[in-house]
Length: 330
Ligand code: SF4
Image (cartoon, rainbow, N blue to C red; front, top):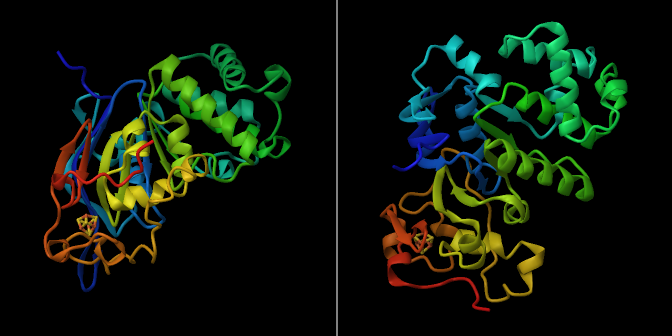
């Protein structure tokens, strides 16, 4: 029997209701994340990655709304739950980590109190037990001397340490899933690597499923198991990170790959992506990537490409049934 995914998104569409009519922002997005797996979701700014993450955490703001599709947590549908039930799930079964740790931390509360409060909100523990758990979480995320640091305020920690505290908060109630939205973008490169290693360890040791949203293909190549590439509100390629990084089939993915420093020398024949992601509401018809695509043909302007299985990946491009490989061979 196949294991039920920790998180599954089925045909999700998000629409912004405008005076001129509904504006599609996420279009028919589907993916699943297994226990202990890290799915990287990558694409340029405006592709819809963070919006998808917000919908999963239940933080979608009006005028945005889910106009189609389902979100399932361990096989149970959660998108149709009442708002207060969604709020209860958030923090308990779905943890969140954002780019700026200060948005998740209260500057006026000690980190110990914040952790203890979060733990007691979600778990039936007394004050002493919650404190013991908070101390062990601080140690687990790599805060040295947790007993002393328990009573300190967020401003007494460095950026990397604050992000570790946010991670401790996110895992405080043993969530099934963590949505990490650009968790390392604001950090120095050396700290970035430590935080990524910490997320990887949490996924493997605790079995937490992680959706890692980033614009940085290098981050994905480093820690993700699978990757979903988004463009103009759609997933255009999804598959195991090894295959997508080293044998990208979608021209947009191939362009993103050429931006990873470690594979750049092997990527000389990959097309660079010219132009910019079109603005919401100005997405071209057919394949929305066609104005920027060096391979665009007549079908591309009128026909939305369906997903085609290619090895262990799925690719939405009219080229992919023709067998063209866009990445260099080693
Ligand atoms: Fe390029 Fe056409 Fe493929 Fe879109 S469908 S990525 S325009 S070749």
